[in-house]
View 1 (cartoon, rainbow, N blue to C red):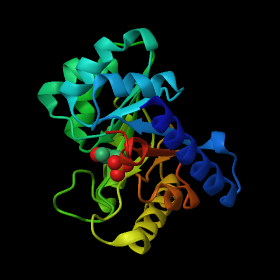
View 2 (cartoon, rainbow, N blue to C red):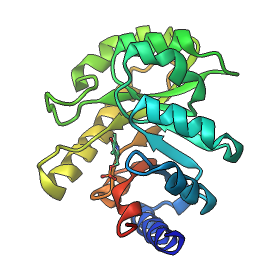
View 3 (tube, protein in one colour):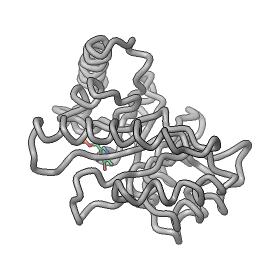
Length: 230
Ligand SMILES: *Cc1c(COP(=O)(O)O)cnc(C)c1O
């Protein structure tokens, strides 16, 4: 397992580096988040041992279990899926970054439940594709909410997160990523000082190269890493 996982990780890192170079950046300008929601504890640990310390989970219970079991490796945990407000209390203190800041109410709950040092880093999730099954702020809801978000003084907003349309293929994905970057650029004109929009979390297994070309600073890659493991 370790050999195949090592090869997959090397392949992903190479694709990442090439896409970063194509956008005039070095590989260390783009953070790889290994999404471990499909795999068990043993495989998650194997990924950590290969040096992937940023891990993403989309279900709070899985994150709790793995965070406890793998605490000695000190991974940086990224919550990438919808977080119900009754699960924030237990989840928020474990996080390095909340990607799925998908409503004002959730951001308020996260702010209330953060007990760590400094501020909790969080992203504003945008429903770029307008897909009704997806969570997130619609693009035109964000600007009017920025002042209220900025007032949440235990949160440090560092950027935006988004996903490409489910069924649009790579061409549509590229357009969705470009739209997220353009939205970010536009929001910057009127952004309160407390909020930074430098980070763009976008791109998954089938489109992370495109996302990097469009300016992603973090990519969330799962299935490609674990291909062929069983
Ligand atoms: C599952 C998931 C990913 C990873 O998807 P893959 O296609 O397996 O790489 C990335 N982001 C979010 C929000 C996810 O839920």
